[in-house]
Length: 467
Image (spheres, rainbow, N blue to C red):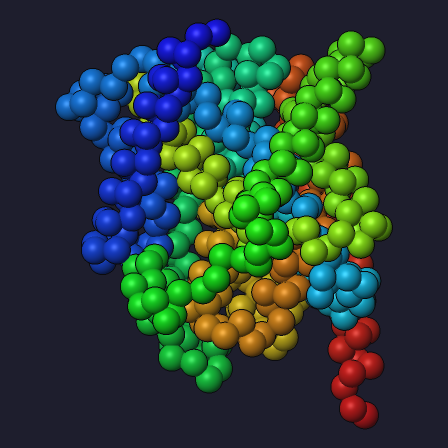
């Protein structure tokens, strides 16, 4: 290892920074990007991809830069996931978790079941397309199809992590899979926003959204920047003096401590049994951080952590990871698999569409559209996509849709910590069929949970209805 390596890393990151700034400028000035609410990381990443050697070759980026961009997501995804539990249950949230859960109750469980079942259906479609085209003598790799659920329901962040996970499993097609994942995430984000906005306008014309005239996205939301200093929000609390230690440094130190412990645990357990190596290191980091967060809560060190400051750490990591993954996308590999990718994405939208009729049925007049639009946006993009779509028809988040979905998403994350070790073992060594069947089994579990939650919600509504 030499200083030259770190110099190349610095140069590669600096170039991505330029593309991120270009993406920021384009988002703030071009209406189509504003209507689609495209993040600067996605815009900048595609600018880098188009200008780079994988497409036009206008700018001959070095192979070192391309390799660094492709590897960035697999490294940065560890602290990004590790940071997720940090700050939960602290400050104003202390002691409110159980009461919030009881208040949300069946509606929260039903939204969790709806979102999770659709994600499983996307997995079934992806692996089903793999089996179909493999039977037609297409040379598809074993885990092709996983990218649909990762890209649609996980967004560019999860799609960018595909390469790192498969690389950990020593699967030589990791770069191709990462490029396919970025493709599905892009299709999901664009299609999800376009269809979502159309559905909102359609629901508004039908009177399904009461008391609000849909069609206008707030200017600051559309442009992605806040020019007026009086309207700019604080990025978080300062719990320490910079002359002692910067508040961001505190958060970085705690997050990287969790990452270090996670690497040590995986290496130690992997030496005992190779099965433990099947789980990606970010999974261990997530579990470790739950423990660290519990210790901080138990010692009443809430003052050390601020979620806004934490977001200032993970936000830039996510921006650079997404931008790098897109800019290094293997276009030729995607074109070779274009037909199955197109079929997979079309079917992915169709199975995701079931959110709307099911939500109308089970929630009826209980803010059905608001609940299903946030589920749709998250199942085709990322959580922020669902929130943005919800904000168009519920600008002040006055309905219970966001609160219920937030709790539902947290519950799904907890359930995933149980199912992930099995799933990643199948990703590492299982067949395409076994991966499909796993999604079928988990999907039925979520359907069962949804049925129970539906009847519980009906009982709750009867009790709340005056006789």
